[in-house]
Length: 115
Image (cartoon, rainbow, N blue to C red):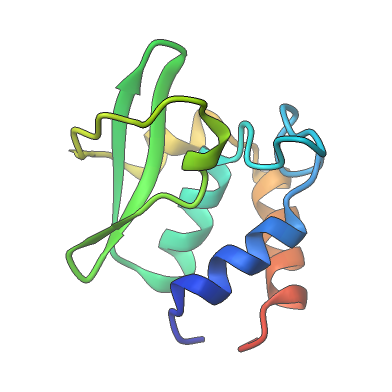
């Protein structure tokens, strides 16, 4: 599967659900999706896992080929002041269950045009 950030974003918007993060709402589908999404993107496309501390806790996202990709940034009303700290899968997994990751993985593969 090739990495096209526009295709990835469109697919994520379609497949996020309450099964992939408890905080999901129709009005804010990206809410609570940062851990599970960053894990999936890392699994499928490689790169690095990154985090930025926020008042509510660490926010996770990815860097691929030297560029930051935060597919869940739209969940926040204010822009993020990124610090791009290295993160481990173990850290990101603290905010996502294996069932949530499996649900997102399956839905993404079904919904992604390059799958």
